[in-house]
Each structure stands twice: as C-alpha cells, then as structure tokens.
Length: 433
Image 1: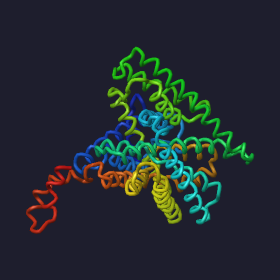
Image 2: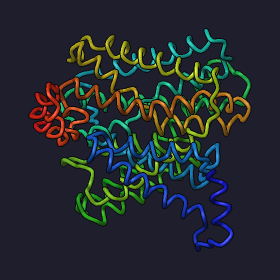
Image 3: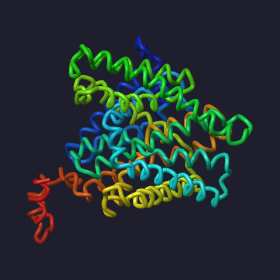
C-alpha cells in the first residue's frame, strides 16, 4: 500500500532533497504527535507512540530504510545510539564499582545467564548453532535508550531506577563488544581460542582509543568553554558524530566508543558535569528517529508460526534469565530481592543495540544473517513495545514512579455517574500520582 501511494505521488512530486526526505519528515511528524498523545492523554512513555508509528509504517510497506541497514540509515542509527550511550556513560562513576563491585558481578551474571539460557532454548528447538549463538548475543543487550526515555517520561527516581540504568548500559557494552567481534568472524573458519578472542580485543582496542581521544578533546574544550553553553553543545554533537564515523571505519564499534568516552569524561573532568540542555532538541530528534527506524524495519519481518514460536521463546527465556541473573547477583550488592525482581523487569526492552547487531550479522553473512533476522526482528519489535510497558510497570511497582495510566484520572468525574464504580475511590490517588 505504501509503495502504491509513493508511486502515485512520485509522478508529479519532485522535492529538491528527494522523496525519501518527504516520507521520513511526515513519518517523524506523525511519531511526534503519537508520542505526545501517549504521554499527555494516557500517561504512558512517549517511546510507545514513536514505536507504534514506526510499526504501522513498516506494516504498511514503508521502504525508507534498506535492510540490512547501510549508508545514511546505518550512520543515523549509530549516531543516535552513540548520543544516548554517551549520556548514559557520563552517569556511571567508575569509583562506584570500586566501592560496590557486586554491581559489576551482577551485570556479568545476568548477561552470561541470558546468553546461555537463550542459546540452550534455541538449540532445544533445533535452531542451528551458527544462528543460535548470534541470537543469544543479541538477547544480552538491554536497551538503555528505551529505559532512559521511560525514566524521563515517568519521572522515576530511586535505587532501582539508577541500578537498572547502569545494568542496561553495561549489558549494551558486553553485547556490542562481543557482537561486533562475532560479526567480523562469521565468514572465517574457526581458529581456536586465539581466533575467538582476537576480534574482541580488536573491537575493544579501537573503541577504547577512539573513546580516549573523544574524552580528551572534550576535556580540553571544557577548560575554556562553558559546560552549558550553546557552542559546547554543538561541539559535543559534532565530535560524537566524527568519533562514530571513525570508530566504525577502523573496525571498532561507534556506540561502544561513545559509551566508553562518556565514562572516561566522567572520571577526568574534575567538576560536576551534566548533559547540556542545548543538544536536547537535536538529541530528542535523533532519539525519535532511532525508535521509529527500529520499529519500521523490524515490522517488515516475515512472520509465520515457526518464527513466532522462536521469537516468543527467545523473549520469554530472556526475561526469565535476566530476572534470575539480577537476583543471583543481589547478594552483597545492597539491593533487596524485591528490588532485584523489578530491576530484571526493567531490563527487558530491546531496541537499537539489538537491531544494530542484527544488521551487522546480516551484512557479514547474508545467508546466516537472514536466518538470524527472521527471529530477531520480530523479537525486537515485540520487546520495544512490550518491553517499554514492562519497564514502566516495574518502576511503578518498585515505588519509584507515578502510577501508569494516571493521565486517565480526568475521566473520573464521568465515571462517578456510574453507581458503584470503583474508579470513584481511586480519583484522588491518580491525581496525586
């Protein structure tokens, strides 16, 4: 349907920047309206509106992004993800791990358990090992981008929110390092332990070097530029974009380099530093573009009974493994069992990191990558939408955010007219939330 409409309008519409620009502009406008409606009318995170708009466009046949991602679409995804991960990295003080090393152990436990549980489940369903391993790596990655958006929209604050954000960021770090290395060796014969470890070291080495240069450049700039200045914001975004392009070209991971740069800048900049307000609009646009792109691409996957079974199995096993992994690492971490349960629930969203890894697998080995994408894309679409809802409920149940759907409270005067309606007793609570 989407292609038919485009063909009709293309007969007379000749925009100077090309028809895809018009398509993307209108799609982002619809996504902005949908996100605003979700938040203002329903009290739900805006990311649900963005993802829903992209999903409907993908199901309608939107062809604005070629799969596997390449060219400008791939760079925009990497840049958007790099901006989000740089901000997340800037919130993680390394000295925290020195005082509470169990947080790092907790992250390693939940990531390792997720990998092995998903791999075992897929092998039990007779998925080939060369497909199950990359899918298990994709399952490791939580989505700090979705979680940060949910936290901002629900005004969540507290230890569960902070710990979940850190764990989601660290899971992305492991997934990007291991997944990028795996994509680089998919077409190579097995070379033993050294052949497995060496690509990981290359990805990490290149990303660390680029991250160090980016952090040092920003540290030098902050010597004489205001941390909250407009020019500083422009410099920040420009340097992240340049670092993303260089890291990808040299064989590293652009989002991983940005994440590490944010963590390094947090350590070497002596004064308290926060994300400047000025890049807020640009970062918001990039974030919206990222969520719409992910859902639009993932919605174009071919669904059938076998694929649905595999995707649902991956999602269910992944959710269980993350909750159990976080719970196992709770001992000595300062968190209660109840907090660990809701932290695991907050780690369920999947989005841009997972899509980027799947795109790398599809580009590296088209045959195997197509089999990986058939299962991964439906799972990513499901967990971008459902995962955002689970994270919202988890933060509320942990007592760190207002009640979901609280925006429906203004309807309570209408509900009072119905005798015996239970909504009459909840009106005050909803308004207070």
